Length: 595
Image 1: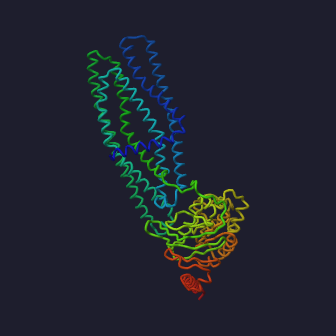
Image 2 (image 1 turned 135 degrees about the vertical axis):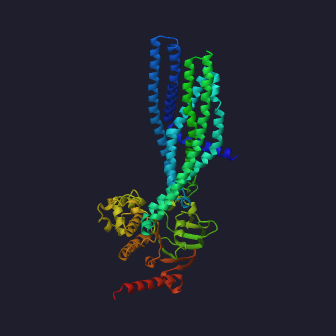
Image 3 (image 1 turned 90 degrees about the vertical axis):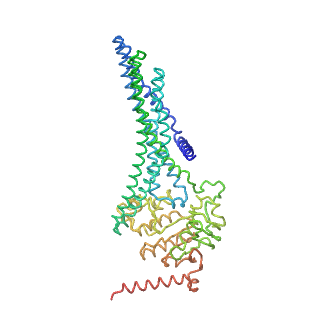
């Protein structure tokens, strides 16, 4: 039952893969023609040699007839070469295009899946599926499929000739066939499992490599180069061991098929030789049978290996389709309401949420925010501040309750319209490899250069940008590694300003900026927040001192909500935060004062 289910799954996978080939039916037709012509040309030489031996050499035939047969051999060889060139070019073209289409579909799918999907995957593992598995797919179409077609036609043509020439010899050759089929059937599951484990080992190795290189600064800072090398070696050894097991399973299948075929060769020599001695078979015909038999060896040998190639392709495609089948965010929900421009009224109605079932991060959160109001959100680490804003962006959906924008549940609003109303500046802003201008323009690609500059000026970024070698055309490197932390944050703020959102979310947006720059940026943010709803998440309480109201979270619940003055008068948790930070600054100032 398990074997049958796996077979059905493999057939379904290959059938789905065939849908990617459908747009290239013209290339497939030309490739099929090239293969058919090539196989036909390869089948001609033994037949021509039979006639040379029997009709010319043995019978002392005319020289002219010999010339025609030799010309036929030359023509067959030329056709073989021509078809091989055409087959190689067309198969590589087909494989490259299909693999590119699959890679594109996988990457596109990854753009639309929810953030919860990425929480279950390592980046390296996803990269392995996008690159390694689709690479196997390209090899499958460029090499395995054409060879499979060639060898199937070759076997069919050879068997037709053999049965027409001497059915007894044909049966001698086919005796090992059922045994080979049984061996392949028995060993397939073992080979498929070995290939699957090999692919998983490669994914873990790729994930570790991406993580190790991405955190190379921390590795060096803590002197963990040797331990990282040991971890890599451990993953690398697992890849090697899994590859050896896969190759061993493939080798067993291949060797068994080869040995069984050798038994057929011995039978043909014995039975065919007796027929020649009995003058019931001509020497040329026997030589042709032997030639076809050796030609038959390669397809049947390759049949032992093709199971490995097909197995790798099936494993790779299954892993790729696992991503393609992942549910996406509801961007195409036809019942969703359009909201081109929001007013900015936000309400949380008894919201409860947890990343894991049964473990709530937020519990029964309720509050209202008026349009244009600035709300500061404070609390201890892990209180749920960032999670609160992730729910507003609908990166995740609430477990219970509702979040409303202008009185409408955000789950009823078109996702594209909802996120089009929101601008986010994170504590650790992500910048893309490219220029300064490209990163600022990321929030609104159609913005003019003058608008980019105005946004940079408002974010207090213009002054440092123009000191760079190429100013706004300066390449900042991967993740903005050529910029300081404060510079990256100011570019991220400029990006949000340029987007001109109705709702602005600042998640520790000034934590890496010096005090003078922070004051300038806060003035710019204050002007930008004047006509839009703003949420400011902060540990540095000076960041929220100008907020209209402050919401205090503790252990996933709202424990205080009011103006800064009201909360200080209550002397609750916010008062404790303020006094603690004031005492800390006093201690630091005393330590830095000259003796």
